[in-house]
Amino acid sequence: MVLPQLYGFGIIRNAVKYDYPFQESFASLARVTQKTHILAGDSSDETNQILKEMAQKSSTPIEISHSIWDTKLADGAQVLSVQTNLALQRLKSSLPSLSDSDWGFYLQADEVLSEEDEDLLKRDLISAQEEGCDAISFRYLHFWQSHHAVAINKKWYPHEIRAIKLKSSIESWGDAQSFRHHKKVYYSDVVIYHYGHVRKQEAYQEKKEDILKLYHAQEKLKKYQKREKKLDNITETLSYFGHHPAVMKERIQRLEGNFEKKVKDKLYLLSSEAQKEELKDFLPRLMVKELHLVSSLKDIPFSSYKNESISLKPNMLSNFLLNEKTPLKMRSSFAQNFPIKMLLTFKLSEKGILLL
Image (cartoon, rainbow, N blue to C red; front, side, top):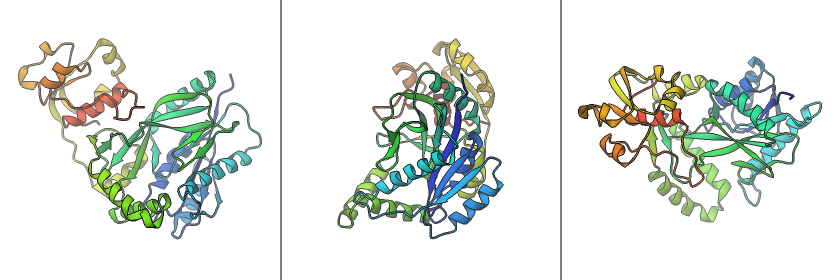
């Protein structure tokens, strides 16, 4: 079969003002695409100049075109899908021709891909093509107020469509969270790292206030501001001391400083033989001096139950004895179980165990 070709697209406006990680986002997109088209809106800051400089340095082509946002649409948030569809159309128009194996990958300016998922992305793109899919949905990690906390309650989408066949009528809709008019979706374990809620505090508050103005009329704004604050206060999170994309390293250090990584003395990991095989390349990254792989609770010393043991075969008894609270998936009714490496990362983080 003809190998699928992947092209990127995205939109941007006032990214410096709102402290978006847009350089990291578009750099991660450019790594995996043949060409990326960015639609730059009418910014009042230096976003467009930085984007231009970034395009000049990129090892793969980044094309930039410009637009003016109409924020006075009846549904103000619709400007986001209008701009996304315009970016998609300009990407299509920039290509000499479109074939059934050409795909577009859309990233929002606070979403980042990891270099660790590039091989899996290629495999899933081929699988989606072979299975006759026209859209690919990816897993999400939504970081909440910190790079070490992930939001999981019902309002947070566990996966979303970000790759679509270009030779189709698929389009962005609403506030550009997703795409519609697709016929068959492929579900990938590639992760989209969403950093929209980890920014400089002043820029974050300004962005939240301005984005609410897109969604709600002025006379209803105070009501929805109170509602948003209430929802923020009950956000459920899981600790996260796992991997971040390499392009995020400097930004994370700038916002949160250097994170001291301490090595734990020992860990008992209760798992099946199949899980051990799946994790064989992952386990050496655990920051523990002694790692004991066991098959039964009986193999774990009682003194190590609460702080030095993790079960990948959880049940009510092991959850109680090992003091584990990490769920198997996000709270959304649409959520699928965490992949084994993601589940282990959350369980390790719960016990304060880090990854290299």
